[in-house]
Length: 260
Ligand SMILES: C[S@@+](CC[C@H](N)C(=O)[O-])C[C@H]1O[C@@H](n2cnc3c(N)ncnc32)[C@H](O)[C@@H]1O
Image (cartoon, rainbow, N blue to C red):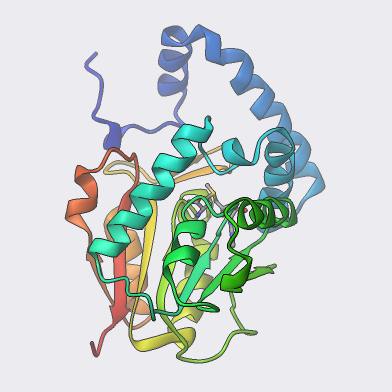
């Protein structure tokens, strides 16, 4: 049987799992322990946010870098640089007011904070553990004088933030860990806080086959599902083709107010 291309694979299917296990016997133990953790957290946490917060607590206790998806410090630095360079080439200016959804331990955030005018970075995250790690990053990079905001959130209603304030909203590797209800909630509310000329860039794990998730941690969507959802919430949505050239497994969409 020929292997389907990455964007068509259903990682939740038994065939995929068996083939993957046969090709990567060293990963079986890790997968089984993730499965056990999934069962335990699922029994303890009803909402996805509570569930994923527990995942982040468990992962951040081992390594905040790995918890946001970078197995080494070097990869953490590279991935942050990639996000920063891309946004700089796609419109970021020092006087932008930026909201970073799922800011993690500021892998890219510290570079945005460094670049933006003081007070213009606002990071939110559901994980108190990763926000504490974000404070360490700020200290390590000596960015205290930039006065960034870091806030813990329980949902993506964004009710506590001012209307039409943010010129740039950024969510890297957040919707790839989110069920569709969370993405829907975000898209239903982000328009209120977005400045009329602002844009919202987010990455997602793309599939051209069946939409699926793996252990409630990694979610795979078709592009048209997310662009359609954004359009239903009154946005224009654009697939960012040039992001595909970069060495990163996810895809990127930019949404803007449809009047723009
Ligand atoms: C893979 S990490 C990426 C962090 C950061 N964007 C980066 O690129 O380094 C995903 C982050 O999103 C956060 N997160 C997941 N679901 C979220 C949600 N619904 N609202 C806010 N943050 C969320 C997690 O706690 C985690 O810090």
